Length: 250
Image (cartoon, rainbow, N blue to C red):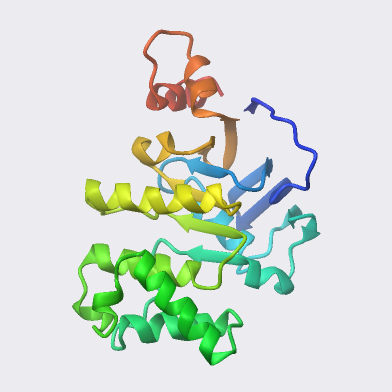
């Protein structure tokens, strides 16, 4: 794997070493090692089936790797770190029959916001942030696809996590709403939150501080978007050119 290294004196937000995972005889992730620094927007770019969602499920503790180690903020991955992680899955985990506000309140409780006043304030704040306060009483099943995406994002952010994992967060969104999401993401990163997202679109990739190209469960390159494009060796190279360059040179 090609890796354009940047130095850091602090513990990484994520430190993955020699990670491997299989479903039966099928290898999903193989010999994956990477460090992701705090306050960074890091994207995993690859086609469907590249292993992105499996990696995120390992980082959230839903799956255990066959081999290798995972550390978050200098600690081995364990249930006690769950409250520091926000996760927006690719497939909606929303309860369809109840309201937007009830969904976010439920997950806020699950994340440990037990004080009713603090929980109510957090829910109001995050629904205002994703521009869903006026729709707070609507059942999820009455919302548009974009509004459901915003509700999922609100759930992932309601407990003010240190690490936000976003699995295909902008899929199906129109350009204006996608831009709004990226405004939120950049504000969070600027405040010190680490954001890790998966995508197969070059628009998402272009917003990231660093990218990792994932193909068939292996990292083929990691670096800043500009470094990766420069590696192609031709003027005007795009991120798509860079991805194809590294995949074809494996």
